[in-house]
Image (cartoon, rainbow, N blue to C red; front, side, top):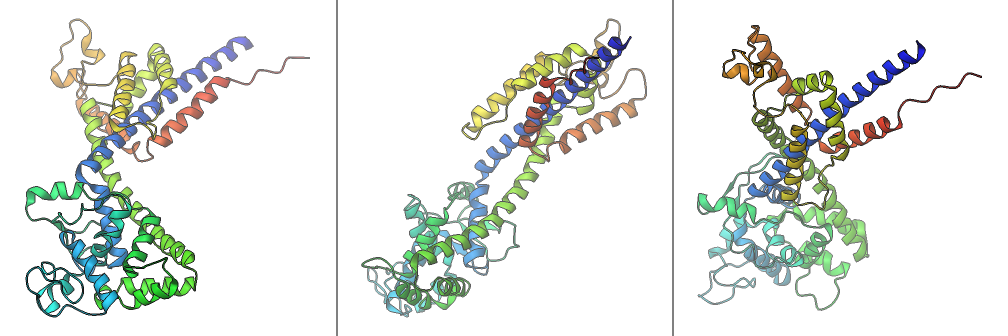
Length: 409
């Protein structure tokens, strides 16, 4: 009698474990699929580069000026000319000549007003030192992308281009990452133009003081960092890197919030298109032991996409896992439900898809379908890493089995 009870508890525990493993596996694969689609969308739209540019502008410009990437090289030359000569170009020189600030004639504005009005520290940094340090020299000057001055912190500012057709390609070509070391070197390169040897804090402080007044946000920040560094150039470089790194952490938060919205939309589309319903899947795993055991075997081999995997490999791996689960009997897809597959069953199209029920109470059945979809969408919020981590822990717990009973003495 006692052995029968122990056996029943073990079977019940095994059934609940298989149910939990199956649901967690479905949640993890769906979340990973949605994340992979989100990454593809982000790359297609240039979302990372756009947020990087937005964060850089807020850091060094405060978002108070427009950034015209087509004038980035001119901004860089203008700032260096101001620092090295301390002069503002006042008259448009003859074609082919060079202005007093060292800006080519084609770039120097009449009366020194046009360029000064659009001068951007972001453009000056991107116009030469940053892209050179990233191995991307020459990519900015050909761009016509303009970033509007107005913008809300944490949101992408309005971007325009010469033609609407080129806006997408311009955003995609933006650099998606600039390392802190590259940014610090770019700052030193900008404020110490044409240094014959290693930069010193004296030359750096002089260059910062000579920055044009249009860079009113950039200059005080650098002055504070230089004061904190004292006479140590290495410490100044480290302070600039920490300043940049701290702000980029905020930018990463902006990007994650934006990408989370894309993930939810992508997840909604995936869940509806593939008919991944948490309640239907849970009911099948609970009532059909063979399917539950088969899904547990598939779940034990399921893994999240590794960092080394490309997006195409990731999607192929996830698709293979979903196909294996479907073959094992997991109710995924818009096939005919079991209730309508019996001979002589009278079902319309909605009944066959499981949206309505041929036995009546179709309204309640529709509520259950929508609730199952909602549970799946909510399950996307923790992310694939959470679910696959939980899947590993459940698999290890299930493998250990129940604690053996202490033998009677």
